[in-house]
Image (cartoon, rainbow, N blue to C red; front, side, top):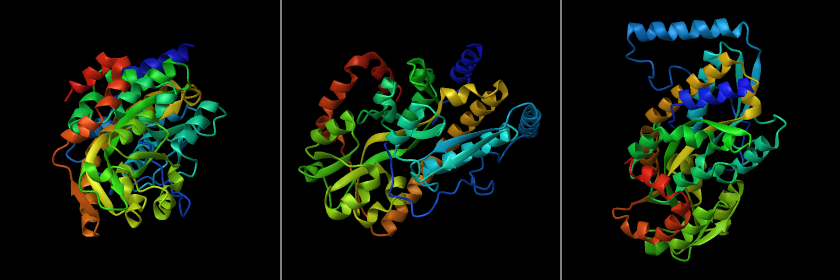
Length: 375
């Protein structure tokens, strides 16, 4: 009990939160677990002072010393996206830092590209016990049905006006409260840190130049009440399709479109079957990295400290790379002939979503207003 109390206190005190249902086509080859080479990673260490370098060296030495007394632990980590996405790069960076800061006593077995199932599959496995999946990067709103009811507020349409607005939340005193809610509700998982994968936009088989063009379209949704309500409010028909089947559903006309962050849209080759992207930015793709209480409790205090320090660094890394990576992908899409449409006036879109916003924030009206006011 004392160990669990220490772990919870560490998570609440040390997490620097930073950092939707995203899922993918079936992977064509086994996922690699290699972290990005240090030369390829953004320059998190460039511009360090001598004091910073000394602190880093001291941290590494402390990790090596701790590892001599810490048991070797391997944690299986599930990711539904490929490693070349924003979230995949964040996963790889986190893996590298956990292993480094723990002095090699913790190994992260990173399984990407959906080889361990969809986000809901992964959550069901983690909450079911047995230790076959210890950690995962998930869309924050996916926790809504798993003890993280407050996380629903992060997926309310048009809540975050820009990335800075999201990061104001993710680094606020509210963030640990959201991260620890599933654990405190007894569901057996806890959040370590926040990140984001960019704003989510609709993409379609046929051109969409305005809100009116969406009306009557069959748009893929996850089985989520907010997403269903948003699509209905926009005049389209929400159609539940498993993410692993989305590519073929677009190809065969089962659905006319879907929505994803820009980087995931490209990485999953969706432009091949739905080459029209309308930048409505209805939600920001807030993400969490979570770990089961079972896995957390088997770590020593030194290892938990290493995990939390790696969480802080990975969150900062995600914030560094996300916007730049997204802008690069968007330019590549335009160059490749994707029909990209900017939404210059979001007021009609926001008005169309007014009911779903009111229906899903009434139980947490004060809390939601705090988030809105952070812009």
